[in-house]
Image (tube, helix red, strand yellow):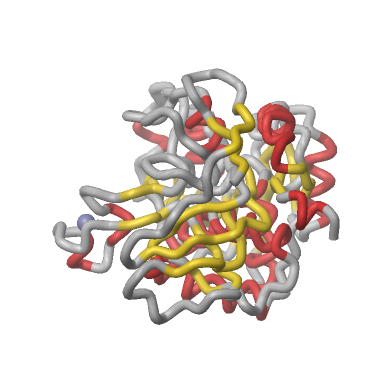
Length: 333
Ligand SMILES: [Zn+2]
Ligand SMILES: [Zn+2]
């Protein structure tokens, strides 16, 4: 197999040849077709997540074909297309696992963080955490659904019954969730970096009724806001943009420090919550919506060996939608 490997903090990914991995009991091997690049991969590369073990193969938005089964796997067949997402495994025993909150497990395994992920031609996954993807034809287009889509979906659920929603940071997650919201009849207000007129146009093209800078006030107070960007100063900005009783959801895994702000921004029963990881039932709820709402992802493809270029372009805000790594087979389609 080939993989793009992170060997130390803040270093480029290195292309390595390795022997093909073998699935253990309950595991599957997947021939990777596509793997999207998530902002969390940037946090991993920058060493902003705790307890990173090196070397690590990043990547947790994987679409591929099962090509080998470990012992005891019967629910998945060789040749089946599956998605492998961030939640790689859980303990099944802690108070969170036992109360349908496996996203908060005390001893989780996260794909491309505590175990090798999808910036590779092959990867190993727990069969019980693989997501069947038979209904999606094009692997690269489906890849961003597996984190951007799922975390966006979980964030949207956390935002409640809001009719008007502000999306702060219009990247991979927001471009999917804006389409879901339009289908649901909600109105989206998109906040981008100041001066990102192309991003604002992109948001309007996906149905946003208003798009502007995150420094601007929206034309009306909103029912909820979701912050996808990793900038802590967006928290008081979002609280300012919402009505009394509104929820502000922080959808990222990492955020720069939140500046202090007046209590009056939170008062009025505004709620500030975070969304952490995802559950398998999030996928079960979200994927049918993708089909019914006919969600289309905007993607920029990179060959696997150009993962560093994909990371750079994502970091520089050059990507509309999602960056997706494709293996050579997939690149030739
Ligand atoms: Zn992610
Ligand atoms: Zn657990």
